Amino acid sequence: MCDLDGVVYLGNRAVPGAGAFLRAAEAAGWQVLLVTNNSARTPATVAEKVERLTGYRPTADQILTSAQAAATLVVGLRCLVLGGEGIVDALTRAGIEQTTDWRSAEGVVVGIAPTLTYQSLREAVSAVRGGARFVATNLDPTYPTEHGLWPGAGSIVAAVETAAERKAEPAGKPYAPMRDLIRQKLVPGEVVVVGDRPDTDVAMAATEGWKSALVLTGVTTAGMDVNPRPDWVVSTIGDLTELL
Image (tube, rainbow, N blue to C red; front, side):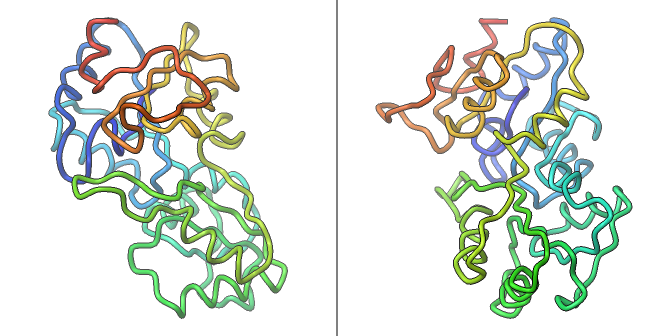
């Protein structure tokens, strides 16, 4: 089970050895799942990006996003979205009605929002203050790119929390909604989580009793204090090929 940003790719650049590792894992008989807290893209778009950058071709069914996890928390609610097409797609596929009018919103789903404006922030805050259920796709403050760390969904969620004076319900790693989605996909056997964030990837593995490998190509770098501790620490995902 591999994270994507900072593990398989950085922005529009593949991490060295990522494609070779994914192909080797599949060839060795492992079930490969790609699990991301990034809610910006649909699973199909994520799968296309993985193939374009690494040469490894996953199916959309191998992709799990925090947007899909968030959708499980707002079933039956009319929702306002502060985020990208990944959230809109996940809610649509779950049969969840969406609205652009904060006054009629029964739920608010907040994720990474590349086109964030003051107006969209104001409308989300107004809906939450009006009593709508407040769900965050994830709480990651940043995400890694080839140009360094950029603001993540958590930074946008924090803005809504501050103005609305309410805490969001988080859906992505390491929280229960994402873990529930993953368990529905898993085949029997040992599970290994590969990620770059101790507080999401490694923490999720620790909660579920899965093994974990921490790579140093994303938000975690050599010499940083890591808690919880993973089973392995490697420079890049390519270094895990020998452990298969």
